[in-house]
Length: 398
Image 1 (cartoon, rainbow, N blue to C red):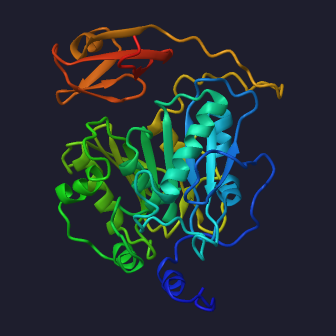
Image 2: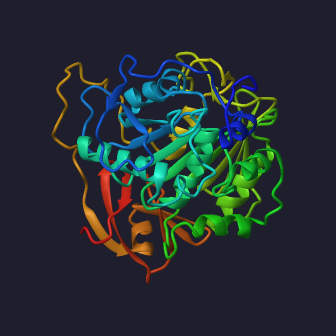
């Protein structure tokens, strides 16, 4: 990259944002479809989608953001998300950056013109979500976003800017939301401890959508201990940021050993930190045909554990999808899956009836795990069952 001749800001970007991937041909690739028109596009991004054959209405959406110098087809080919979409039945949206926006095709996670609500690239991604939902009748309560490095930084920014759109996020070798507002600050964020308290980190999230009262997205954080591009301190800072947003302690509620030298520390059911011993900079994959395996190795797609699988489980994408193979016909199914009752009741009553559960005095919908507030008879919400045992907030809909 040092041999590339960029002028001004682009020269700094090339030296600083040595994020991920290797250059590859742009899509379209097999099974990846470009959506040429998807509404307002102030960030001048391209939209690609992967849609399982015959995808039913009422299914989730996952937005997957590539890293620098990569394309949508790179993330499609290696991340494992398309295979999981086939298995669990959901739409995948692959936004793509251009060299016109950023010389290295990095999503501009460090600029307020692009990473804030209603602006630039963030607004373009929101338009893509709306397009996918409109095209496939997707479930607005189950929209998720994930990304690698610069895509991971943008993922955190999107969760802060659009907590009313995204139910959860998966941040792979990424940066805390609103860590930087310039390229110079981006370098510092990538390499150094910012010495902010959890409350200070949380304030950078809550300031992005003033007046928003929740629920906040659930967050899975993936970080290699041998990453010298986005240093491991970023994983800790992301943990501090999102536990504080959820009002949780930074002391884990559980610790678990997983394949690939991975240690999972959980903070209630809202935040997970996956630390992968010795792994460098990239998305963790685990090629194979086992239940927990997915993805393929490549530049900055590193063997060890399938992060996409575990993130998908954390999102609840494996719930309610059944084991029926996808239809062989290419004609999309238009009849929505059966939907259960819509019930308005107190949080206590929902819990007693098995529609929700409580943890540390807080109530969460079964299946979606959406936050419902205090566990008592005075807090009332409506819940709708979108598939067996999967309840989502439906205030004003019953």
